Every structure is written in C-alpha cells, then in structure tokens.
Length: 523
Image (tube, rainbow, N blue to C red; front, side):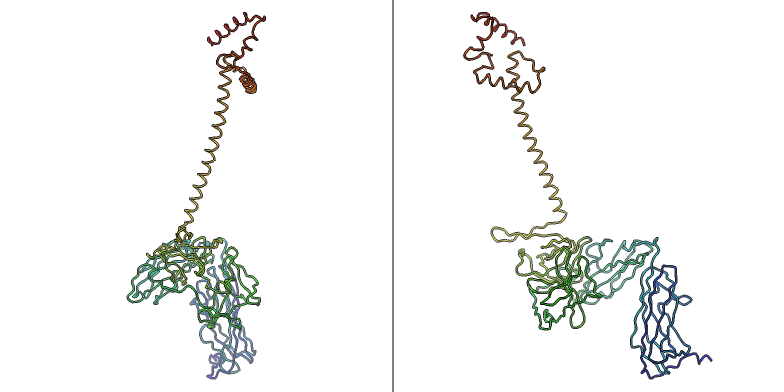
C-alpha cells in the first residue's frame, strides 16, 4: 500500500515539463501561501520538487527551516497540470526568491520527465511601522591591512592592499542597530583585484552595502601605497571603430549598442532619453546636472555596462565614478587637448575597483583626474591616495609658458569667499567713514567761521536754529565779498563805520563803536 503511493521513476526521460513558483507578500508575523505549478503535455503521475528560499525571512509552517523545502504530489493524478501549495510564516522584513533547487523528480505518463523551463517566485515581507530603518555600520575593520580612507558610517567604499601570501580577508563589522543583520561575501583573496561586500539589512528590510576593493600583491611586491602598486604607464587614447552593422570596436573588442533599457538600472542623477545615434533612434540616458550622454554597450560574451558618449569625437569611454559622502564624480578620459600640469605622469590607477586614467605626482601621494561632479562642475580634481578625499583643482598658464597647479579645496574656497566678503564690508565701512568725516569737517569749519564772526557781532548762537545760522553764514559771506574784515569788524571803505550813529558827523558813531569794542572784549 505504501509502495503504491510512491510514483515510479524510470531511467528514460523523454517527457518535458515546466515549473513555475508563485509570489506572495505579507507582514512580519503573518502567513503566506506559495504554490508550485507543474505543466506537461500528458498526465502527471507524481512529483517531488525541492525549492530554496531565505530562511532568515520566511520559514515553512510545521516543517524544518533549513533553507530548502520539499513540494510533493505523490498520489496518482489524472491531469497534465498539478499545483502544490505550502504555507510560510513571515519572520523578518525583506525579499526572498524561491527557486527550484537540485534535481526535480517528476513522472509523466509513467516515464521520468525533465524540467525544460522554470520560473522563480518571490515573497516580499513587509515590516511593521515600528521597525527601525537603521542599516549603517558603527565599526568596520579588516585583517590584515587597513581601510583607506578611515572608516566612516556614511562612506560605503574603501580600498586596501594585502601581501601576496594573504588568501582570505578577515572582516569585522558591527551594526549600529542591534536589530540589523550583517552578511559578508567575497573574503577570498585572489592575486590582483578583489571585492568584498558587507550587506547590512535593517529591521524594516532596507539594505545598505559597504564595499572594500582589495588588491592582493604578487610575489616580490611590497604593500606600500595603493598608487605604487596600482599604476602603470599608458597611452592617452584608445582605438575605436564604428562597424557597418552598428556595432563599435573598442581596443579590438566588439560591442553592440543596447537600444532597450528594460531591466537595466539607470545611474542616479540620469534620465532616459530618445537619442539619434548614427541615424538610428535609440534609448540613452543623460545626466540632469552633468549633461553627459551615456549608452549601454554589451560585448559578444554578454557582459555590458554604461559608456560615456562624446558627441563631438563620436567615441566611447567607460563610465567610471568615484564618490564622497555627498558628491559623485564621473572620471572622463584625459585627451591631448587638455591643459596638463607639469610634474605629473599619465598612468592607470584603480579607484573604487575600476581602472581609470589619471596624472600621478612623483611622490605618488596624489593623483589628478579629469571629470565632472554631480553638481555639474567640470575640470581637474585631486585624489588623495591615503584617505580617498577629493579636491577641485585648476591649471593656470603663466607668461613663460610654465604650468602652475593650484589646489582649490572646497572648504578653503568657502573660507576665501568668507574673508573676501569681510574685506569688502570693511572697505565699504572705511569709505563711508571717510565721507562722513569730510562732511563733518566741512560743517565744523563753517560753524567755526560763523561762530567767530557772530561772536564779534555779539550774537548768541544758542538762540538760532541751523537754518538761521546758514542764513547768517550767507550774510557773512556777502559781507566778506563787500570787504568786511571779520577780525576787526570794520569795512575796508569805512561804509559800515559811517552807518552807525544818529547824525551825519560821525562823532557819536565813533563813541558807539568804542563801546561796542569794549563789550566784545569783555565777552
């Protein structure tokens, strides 16, 4: 009786079946149902299919949580389609893919069948609103070697160098939130470039990845600076040819221009556009601030990536970026038309795991790359090898045709603008002070002049308004024009002397003037 429940599997496997796995979504703590459907041209006798899943996100109800669960239909069926369902409990936020694992055992019309096609399913686990979204690390260390630049929770890319005898990188990482989970991949060290990824999944399922690009040196090399171990002399230009079939050959390798971006992730800060490429309408992406045109090229072996298209030269160059916490820089090719500083050598250098063209200084502590920032600033930038910091640079021509390189640290530039503003304000204040001083000096001179003249005439200035003083000053100036002596109070032609008195003899006038002079001296 037990034997009759188990389908017979034959060595012959001519029958073909397709397998599909359904998708589902639910909140942490709830249950979801996943269904595996088998389709064939003839009646299906029975089936046993293993399905893999992420055991940290879901687990089968009433079964062991091993990461693989069996879907079985052991009873004889009478149809060409069989559906097998199973319940899972959602235990953590995130997304897991369910796929056919191993060799499926399926019997169709009494014969062993093979799976000709299969499609995976997904379970999306949603987190309650109370769950934390903190997916940052609070510490990250490697052994052997050190991270460059020093660890910062907001920085996600680092460089490192290890000796030739290192076969595995020991990574120590701690999450900032105890509820977050950490997974590490890529710790094996092969000669050359290696990539280690530390994935941090927050309690609510949000993910952040920290990447370490490590260079394992060859025998005989010493782990000094990254610049010393990762540079070599290169030529400035590459050879490119546009073929009749629309493909492009770059340095001897043929690429096709992808016209449909379905399933391709577009870089941040870029948007998809319609573009006329060699008379053909294709899809491309354009930088919102950088203005760069990117196209997706795919090689004959199926590998692809974005390339920068130079609309003037009609050439492609790899889309390589370096980043700081807030700004991303696209590294552009260094061409003959660019003004280059003296004392630097054109080399290849590895930044963030990608090989780019740079100008390296003699001490190999800094290198210059030509590029454009995510803010739209285009020009030279200086990359410090020891900590990965980036500064803007300007190359200035001198009168004797020598080239001068001037650093323009963003912080320093901001400081210069601050001091320039302060100096400008002080200059305005000084000019205003000088103008006010001149005005006050002129007014003081006028008042002093009026006071001297009025005091000789016995006038009390406290009783006069400024307008009256102005009028008095004008009268005094008129008197001066008429020949009045401000020191003596007499007119040069004696006309004022003769104006005093009651008669025409002038006798009483003289006495009156004498009294006036006496009173003036007493005052």
